[in-house]
Image 1 (cartoon, helix red, strand yellow):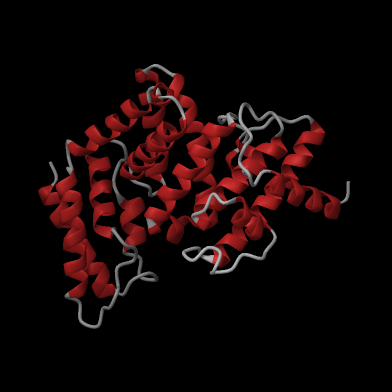
Image 2 (tube, one colour):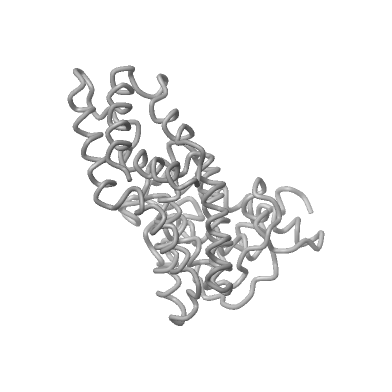
Length: 308
């Protein structure tokens, strides 16, 4: 099979799945990649209309078809989806399984849900939580989006564990992500989104232990930084930066204050040794002017004083 032939086959497979009607287990890695690729376009175009999705895949989508979509981002997702389906076709030919590596080669070959309905829910939860927090895109880019997708597809498989087992697995992932600059509050948000998406497409019991896992993260955070302090930290960061002469829209990312507060909570609860993985990035001199960095560090000290 030539590269061109693989690309043509990948496009046809993606187009075949724009109706999103396939249910049940996905054993073919190429089909799994197609389902994921189409669902990421659902979020990016904010449409489940098969015609809109087809236009996106054919490179003919316009602002009239999807008024709120970032057309450049849609084009990037289409190219990525085609590459993933091509990789899936190769894996199919080699008899390899449908696992995380199909849509995220950097993740390795760990198991993810292969149920089509739950996989779509996991993709939507991942991409919507990414879109809601611009920090992800600013720091981790497309790679972060791919990891969010495979993390989500793994997380949904934890629903069938007992609550203690699911909580342990989620706490492990929280430690891994927090060490890389993603406070566990972000995983808490992701899990809440995942629970909502699963409940919207499956029986109530399908969420299993996921609500308990989300609640465990929230409880651990709130022992040190409650929801009110998260909101207050955002306000403090905005006020501090606005007070810097000449600083206009100078926050490194939206919700920088809440992110700092969440990282403080992780350090206080032992999820991380400290919060430098986040704080150093937010205050980096290549990202913000020195006066803004100083203002953010003052906000950080205020958060520490208020945290329990």
